[in-house]
Amino acid sequence: MQRAESVDKGLKDAWPVWARAVAERIYQNRRQQFWLLQMAGWGGFCVVTFFSLTLWYNSVEVSHILQILVQAMLGMLLSIPLHRACRNLWKDPSPARAAIAALELLILSLVWTVARIAAFIHITSASGEWIWADFGGWYFSSFLVYLCWIALYFGNKYYYRAQLEQQERLGAISRIREEQLKRTRAETDARVAQLGMLHYQLNPHFLFNTLNTVSALVRAQENRSAQKMIARLGDFLRHSLDIDPAQMITLNEEIDALMLYLDIEKIRFGERLRLEVDIEEPAGRGLVPSLLLQPLVENAVKHAIGLNENGGTIAISGRVTGHELCIVLTDTGSGESVTKVPSRSDRRVGLRNTLQRLQTLYEDAYVFEIGRRKQNGLRVTLRIPWQETGSAE
Image 1 (tube, one colour):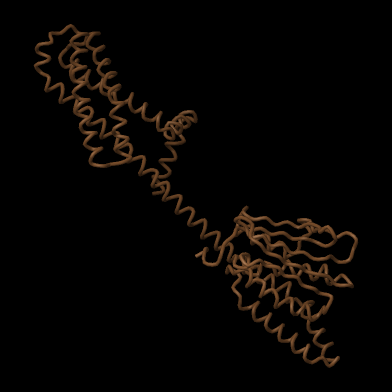
Image 2: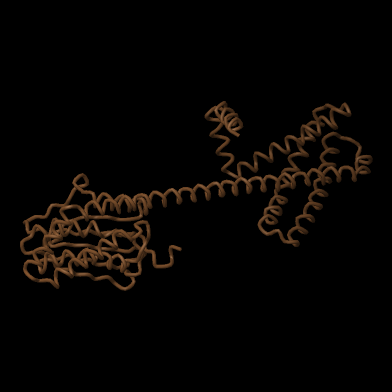
């Protein structure tokens, strides 16, 4: 197989560049291909007629050669209506169209036979009596020529269709492999994102703050709050380990998972952390990659709420616009006069993982924008293709 492919490649490389370009253009242009085959076929008819009749009967004269060319031109002109009949039969191979094509074959053979005989008599000045007496032989040869024309026409059509079907099969196989590769990359990136999430969510700093808050609550004899925080931490850890990051879940499920983390932070920050969630009913059914919002919200908690003495508000909204699911996350900033928008090089692990997953899953069919709010703080806008529960199956 490899040897055959190398030989075929060697033959292609042996062709000049202009020859390959012309052959490619003719192959793609069916009209040019038809007329090229017409001229080649009727030229072949002239060659066969010359060697089998003119040369055989030792009548190599200008008039005999001319009448062969005239016969071929008349035959080519009469093949045009036959081409239309065959084209209609190809589009709709009904018995009626087949009968019409057969009738047209018989009639065109008859017309061409009469035209051939008349042209032969007129050009060669031969006696028409013995030629007309051999009308059956002339008609049989005309019928045979047009029958071969039809066979070559449909043979070319079937070959071209087989080539297209082969290309479509190869394209489908290529698309399937590409989708499988894309899915594999997405699953790999999702698992990497999960490991990254455990790295930057469950790092010692996060655990230290959480356990320190629990210790402070115990010392203040706020046992109920301490128990609540420990329970939320357990739920969060269990969810982080159980969830499949390669799975697509609804936005409502993603928000519920996000609340496990925010409940811990809300106990730690108290009234300083305010939440606003506004998810429209259709948007809540939209599918999103699991663990999509976690790193975005953690950045907001760390760089906005955690650095602002007065705390702030994190708002999450979701809506469906056209064929897109639009998710907007905003924070009220760290209290500085101007909130810095992180550049591409300044984006940390969470943002980089999020962008990598989006690129793998949606290629260029998504929008991820980070900008400043008019008041203060940052706004993250995410738009992904709309998929409802059950539509991805």
